[in-house]
Image 1 (cartoon, rainbow, N blue to C red):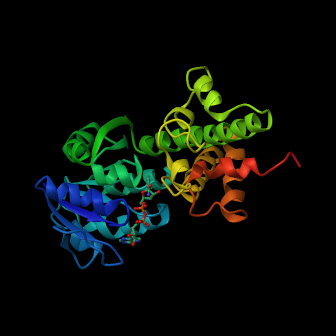
Image 2 (image 1 turned 60 degrees about the vertical axis):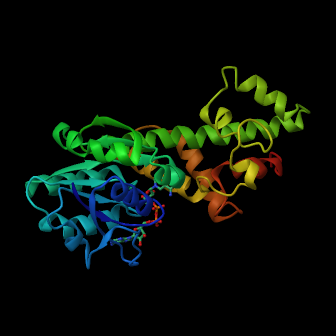
Image 3 (image 1 turned 60 degrees about the horizontal axis):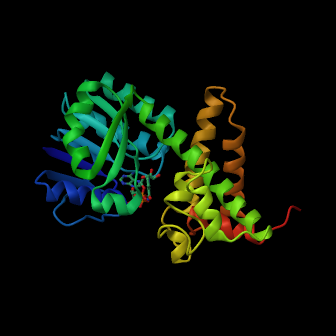
Length: 290
Ligand code: NAD
């Protein structure tokens, strides 16, 4: 396939490199000019998109996605698929899909989980919203860049799945960390706490697969001085998107709102920026109730 790839940062560069390795022709554009080996550099986003069967974007936010889509969609050939893999707000995903459809194209919102490691290893999970035919068209590319692609529904459904998942993850990580800090103060050994909770009804991905306590459970960023992993500021971004979405549809999400506020404080007022999101545990360790 001919692929246009726009946004070749931490995630986009290894994703594009995997498509090249699998034999696809990839033209790339990034405002910084960075280009992974094997990707043909284009002068502009529109130039990367011209003649492509699929255009993939991997950009920082919804405002940038909207600007790039406005430039790229008119340059794409009819029948091509615009596939955004960034994490953005549901409204931007739907607006871009409408614009693509009006131009005789189809669009997918296909945010990912799995992080930079998953992008490099080709083991991302794609959560995809958009028409069946477009999903089927892009599936061979998802299969190269990832290990699983779930077709979640119509336009915006991929972003909806992503922010709901990450709202659960953020809140669960916080409560796992506060429970460890409480257990410490109650004199409960962390390894015993892990043994019990990881096989009891308190188990979760945060506890079992990504344990925030160093030296306990499987290897995780906690064992590496809380170097990310998944940085606290990226969790804050996703929690803000979930709150924005909740407001737009009048959904009551009190724990999601509190998780967003705690990560905001952690990133903006405490020492959370640049640390893994599980570094909430040392945050709670050092605090009392006041
Ligand atoms: P990044 O900042 O490393 O990459 C974004 C790239 O987009 C940059 O290289 C930037 O120069 C480029 N860019 C910005 N404006 C542009 C424009 N107008 N035209 C062309 N290129 C432009 O970010 P990232 O970590 O690669 O994340 C990308 C997206 O993936 C984000 O939406 C993020 O939320 C999501 N995501 C990231 C992770 C992660 O662990 N890093 C995990 C899951 C999802």
